[in-house]
Length: 441
Ligand SMILES: *Cc1c(COP(=O)(O)O)cnc(C)c1O
Image (tube, rainbow, N blue to C red; front, top):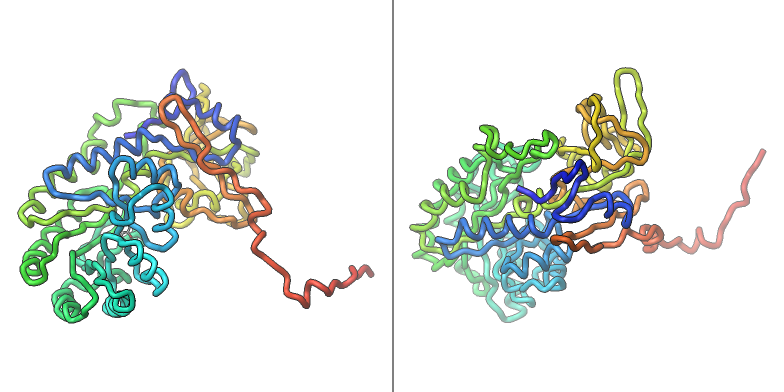
């Protein structure tokens, strides 16, 4: 579900016209719907209401301060993977005591900082990390709250690059070894064993892999609780979203079709998992990123050129893979729709960016309305892993971001000022004072 729809042929975010936004702020432009963010958070929070629980929004999906503040106001906790993300959360008004810190490569400095902030827990990915956390905690004379990440070795049936819960990837501690690790961890004086964690992958569009993983891990939890007094079980994030939205087909009844029936929703997630989790009697954590912010954002781009080559029709736009890398990185398919609808036949087209890479392609051979220079297109469902994965490749500035709330719209990040891209660079002395005259033969 989301709050992007056409009103008299023009695309709106809530009550704000996208055309008006791009006229004011230019393109490429990310636009977020606060109502959609709120709706997704509340739906999931509500579905888990029968359990003591905490929804920890995964900051890496979209870390804009306004997104974080909106979620903090709703009572969200946060899942962070770096000191930078933890600082962002605090800066946006989130509470470090609601933060879990995940990731396979936490540095000593990051552990020191997070401990000083009194985070809820570290999710630990290896024994070496446990020992490191123990050493840092001993120096600070505190007990570090930890949850060990179990790799349940279930196939999340998602894209190979975003599967994390099988033994062919770097995450967590193998299911069979976890109990031995807890036994050894107990001997570490400055580590407090508080929970168990898992996260099996991302963009899971069915509830079945979650169910499988919970069924497999629940007996382990039951064995660990009396021994170590754990008080929470984090089932991670990974809840998928619909990338083919109802918008392009223009069919609002799409959500009532058979195709929509099997979609993972907060309700189906809760209905399947609450009965399995409730008997554990623990606080349950979920760490959704994409599910909260994915459908809440779009990337608006301007058509620069239309270039027919042979049987191909290339629509060259001003957003590139540096603004949205998901299609190039994972082969992700995003719905692309015109900001102003026109009648007429559709043409099989490739929407491509200006970056000098063939993978700078947003879609191939897709029927799209005829567009021309100066028209605007919206790349849908880019609220997660969109802006947060941007780069300045090709020395292109980071795009601007806007937040919409009802009739209100606000710029929540300025388009990057070009010289910012190279301001941290400096010449070494031997180049600075040595300049060859141009050689012209
Ligand atoms: C990335 C990540 C998440 C969020 O994943 P989504 O697919 O965006 O829900 C949650 N937990 C951990 C440990 C992660 O690494």
